[in-house]
Image 1 (cartoon, one colour):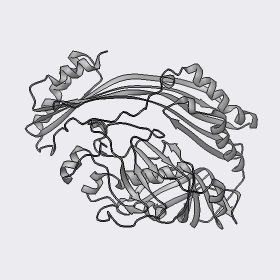
Image 2 (cartoon, one colour; image 1 turned 45 degrees about the vertical axis):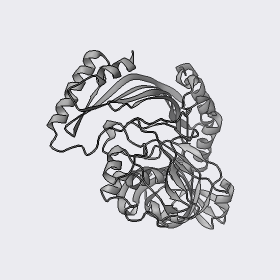
Image 3 (cartoon, helix red, strand yellow; image 1 turned 180 degrees about the vertical axis):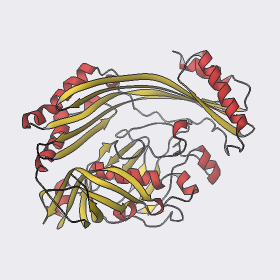
Length: 444
């Protein structure tokens, strides 16, 4: 299949004023397991095209997975029809060409990974849980894709990337559970025993749990929990769209001290320890954007639409058309590490909790960064700087902004998390938060 030829054919369509073409070839292969046994192998391989046409300032988008001349022709006609039927101008036009940096994001071995290789790795993963009589479940996926963006103003961009993702939940005999995950552009970075042992240890140590009254506690948040907090803040307030719609906690507060001095958070699309991408889904080169620098609110991400409305430049954070309601959005969020080891983070807690991760996170009051969620797969009591056993899971209703303002220690090491209730990846350390509010208990 010659994608470049299809792009040329689409851009030759002369019945519209402007045209933008996005082509995505994605391949995902997944091995799923439960009760320490593989029960499913699935794979998808598809090409999808999005064509955005402008007519008299109005825009329409058509989508097709028919990557033939006839399929493209039909989609062009639909995009034109939709553009002509709009009642309001789009408010922006396609960007012009800009040189994008070359960033390594492709690993051939990960792209070529076979079901047999994934099965071999899963066998190593479940061994410890199997010996303990526990249920290990999860999935290991490999794949990646290619992205092409072209428009009638001269944009012509192409990149390809790979990704390996592993998630593991271990359930014990008496209700204990543990969680671990791994993400990278390279499967060779995956160390099955190390990741699986983390989940198994959580399950082993949470078999016996005690009830704990809701309230305000000092917490140590492990990386998946930090990623969820930052993911929710990204969704609620790190986008220029949220700022323009006056629903972001950043509105009117750029330049203010909103977080601890220890908190520096930014989107860094070129960081190869995360999920790098040289340009966005409009072909605009991606730029680093700081949200908090040493606690001070600094900026938000833009696509071409929000940049035009704001009188500034796009930062290269446009999402593809199916997610236009959320665009722009960060895709490779980084929180700078600190100086503390995991042991030092716990040692600094007189009485509090260690939280492995949150789930079912939802926004409550976006203008204040308030979210609700529940702890899961390993919540432990800390007393006098030592772990004292597991507790029943708790519900959280808390402002992510307040949590960041209460950070008093940050871990040295960063880990890539992709299950952070947001788009893309989160390269984050563990953190200690002086005050964190739990508002209820969850049912076993």
